[in-house]
Length: 376
Ligand code: FAD
Ligand code: UDP
Picture 1 (cartoon, helix red, strand yellow):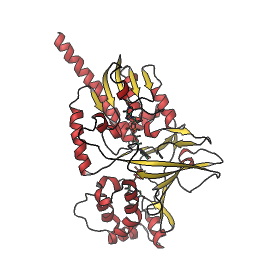
Picture 2 (tube, rainbow, N blue to C red; picture 1 turned 90 degrees about the horizontal axis):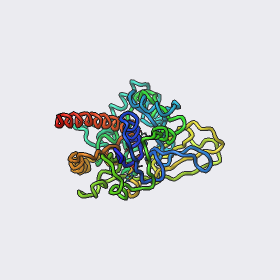
Picture 3 (cartoon, rainbow, N blue to C red; picture 1 turned 60 degrees about the vertical axis):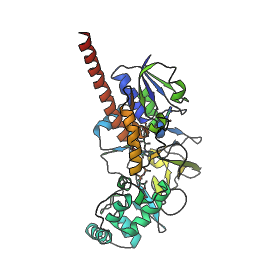
Picture 4 (cartoon, rainbow, N blue to C red; picture 1 turned 180 degrees about the horizontal axis):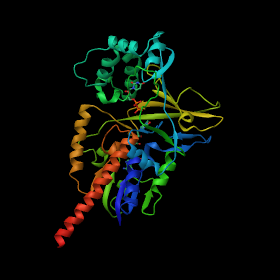
């Protein structure tokens, strides 16, 4: 008899399995439908021996010491600060939009104060910031919004930024200095030997068994367990009883080139050209040395694996209905990007899952106390 069946071997499932097995001495079975662990952060060496991310580029960054220290038990790190260029008006310019972006784009020589005035002059007054369009036009005006955000967002989500929550475009700041890092978090690093190796270390415990290539629905009635942790899509768990929650998917096209480097930074975004949104060259991220290089193109699409919950008010409403069902269950717990329908980064999923672990183990104490009270 397992104490826990965990559905999904991504960040959420691996964190819970590791904590429950190691700290709470629970017997855990992870059931994963894919043929590998790691969820969307899975990486592997391709035919040419280059380390690539199967489900698109994954760059680790966090402001949480707790999350960083937790993962550091299972991996060494390679310091890495991600940089992104955007192809706009025939030039490659830094994204987030910063001082260099504006000077390069418009052939100017502004300083920090002057670029701030430049943005203020261009910015549109928006009374209440509700949408992703509001976020950008209120900071830098419509022209830059159209150059950098409108087309990219349409490709990525098949929605106009005015139809998406403010939180989406808010992920990308605007800067008046020359800082060209994509993230400014205090911890920015890649697992030195890759994500999959880190997950393997997390799951390497005698209390943890992993069953791959299995949809949990095939086995849930045959394998005895006390509690379930579910990290797949929440609407799927409830057989879409309120209808499907929308997700965005992506087709990843890989190409290996007979050259040491393809592009100057880890990622180049293409807001206005091509059907793809961005190209990432893995060797920038991993620091691997190799005479060839592998790049990945991202083509967003509606159908396929559910990668991105779509942050819009009507989807949040639908999710709330599923969450009510989830909250009414006593022995099944939901976590992760799909399990809670949240556009979460990896570190947020780790933090969320550590919190669930704490809740579960406190609950256990409470239950045992109750049992004791009853018995006495
Ligand atoms: P997942 O990794 O999706 O794991 C869920 C697992 O459950 C999957 O393996 C799935 O196969 C399994 N599953 C689902 N249903 C069933 C079932 N019925 N039976 C059995 N198994 C099932 N985050 C960052 O911090 N930095 C980045 O740079 C970054 N880049 C990203 C790029 C892309 C293209 C995408 C899509 C995401 C990116 N993320 C990034 C987000 C990151 O992938 C997630 O935060 C994280 O992987 C979520 O982990 P999870 O365990 O919640 O979900
Ligand atoms: N975005 C954009 N242009 C860009 C980069 C981002 O319009 O060049 C918008 C787009 O809507 C995107 C969102 O900002 O989905 C968040 O970008 P991020 O790079 O965080 O996306 P992710 O890495 O999660 O796909």
